[in-house]
Image (cartoon, rainbow over all chains, first blue to last red; front, top):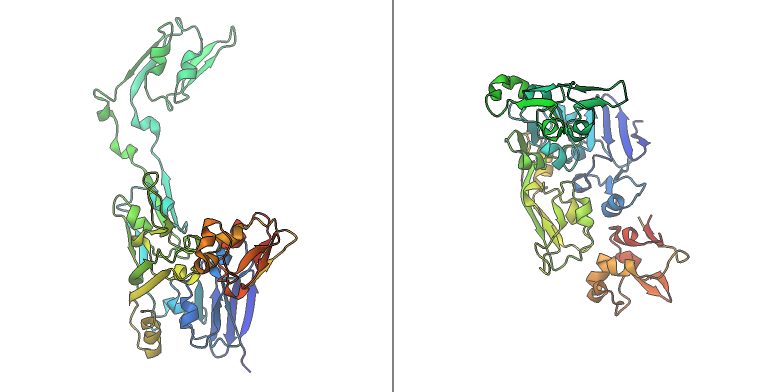
Length: 345
Length: 76
């Protein structure tokens, strides 16, 4: 007899059936956004979404989802409709997202390295910490040019220049009989603070940047180099990176189009939606001046993916999320088309 | 998950009563810090301790647990 076996590890699980082909459904709790799309899509009602509000806001040991392995028929539909890729269904170790006959969302997030200036704004804005921008800065010494000379016959080794130097480039040894002074040319930025503060005028220095120094600098040495990385496992294509990118290097395509409506009259400002939203779309409204009356919850609509997690978690039904269009790759299967189309409401 | 209370921990401060979004929608005056005018709300402070009246109405958002200063109310 063929049976489904379930393996549970911490909050994650994996359900497997071994017959002619090996079918496996695995769940990653830390990736799950609690939208419940899998629960409403499952044709055999094997999936139960737990109380997401309580799970996200308290240190609950519960997993966000549970699947009854005796009901699960390992069809893979939950994995196909999961907008976060928290449920991964594979056939003979091949995830269905890589099998062409299975439909998947037409959604992506990418950063064009040609345009990226490695400002890291996207890394800071990403609500899921999915982006890493690694950068190597140019040598500071190659960006400044000038001359500095200390006349040790005049210098009294008072140490004032050492204390004043903003770049920590001067080293003064003030031990009697062993006195010395040195300037680290790699650190010096020729700001001339030492020259101006020297009480005995022992320092001669000139900054060449202003007059003709720009020509001394090889512009190739002034470039910040780097690389960008988006963790596909965590990225939910919310569009924050695209929204904050100053050079149009980040491009995001969302899987759904739709609307998010907050009924301010029903809202009791408990903050569940703010904590549940995976895209940092919802926040408590802040008055711009004192005494101003603001709405209960504000939305940053351009970053909403219409997943509906907030509406599901709201205890007083003050939020409505509608999906009007779903973008998915073509398939011949009517039942799969039906499930994707059923997401619209 | 189920809503649980521990009266031994409870200080009777009533923060959970006024923070609970379901309570507020059932009996709006509690959001202003007043007591509920009826017993339709999920929980109330009675004789100085928290008491559940209608735990079946709980939507399990975790707000009461977040605000309780002494771990006297939680979801389990």
